[in-house]
Length: 410
Image (cartoon, helix red, strand yellow):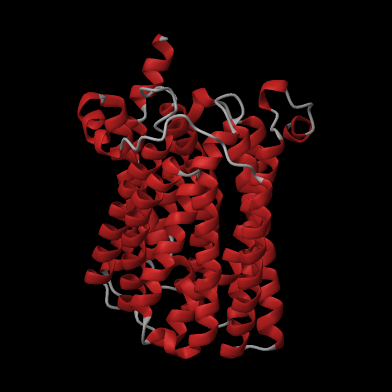
């Protein structure tokens, strides 16, 4: 029944314009580069140090600077344009990987500085992208845009590991990483150039209202609940952004296998995202969220058993299957909420900044807890931290109720 639905004619209110299509292409290119370069973020540093503490501190510092640069980038986006900030971010990320190429094994000695560099580039890039995403979509087609964005990005993420797998089979070792980083540098540079196809969007509202968001948190109960929800979302993100890939490399000890398995997981994600983009309905956001959290809980519970190829593979497949349901459902909810705030969407940049601060606070807290309680991958507390981060996501189901009820009343 689902197959014919995939090919039905798209209703006019769900169609995407030229800028939305270009944005999807840019994000796909960025994801392709990231799927190559994330080998550094999740595997390269691990290969050089085999230290959960160093990998955790790298992520903590990087996320802290992402939050800082969201604040700065938000002001620049308001005063100049979101595309200016977007291009600054992607250019800095390209330069970041050029520096990795030059530093080679010395990255491990200066991992704090590289974490700062990564955080600055990512902060500017993502505040530009999230604002652009809001601008090129609307309440009628946003869930479709998010679904297609996830599907195209996942296709790009699948291509990256396949290419890196071929490279590591042919070359291997640290030289393989060097080639991968070189390709990523070129891809990010190309993305920065192609972003010139998206024109600036002149705004008559250049005032930066970040200082007023605290008042909005106190006065608007729905918005306050949404920010609690983003903090809780960050708690789980902190673990899942770097731990799964480390578990894979620790069990299999082959970058090529990690690459090919990553491509397989991306294929699963593509199928789920395509189905989501065609079949999802805004009124079922909370139901999708509940299903995804239950799935994550089952996946995390597997880590209570001794780490083995079967356990790690099962864990990765389950969290991949349920991931799109959670992220797309809550993202759609959040963007719909922005439209209900004062000035009708004009606070979108400030909203993205506050959301990112909440995300990074949650990520930092859970990563610090993980590395404080677990000195290695076999530490008894490690699975419980992962399970706890997943269990906390049940709170999102109740926090989303406020907007749903207010929408029904209208």
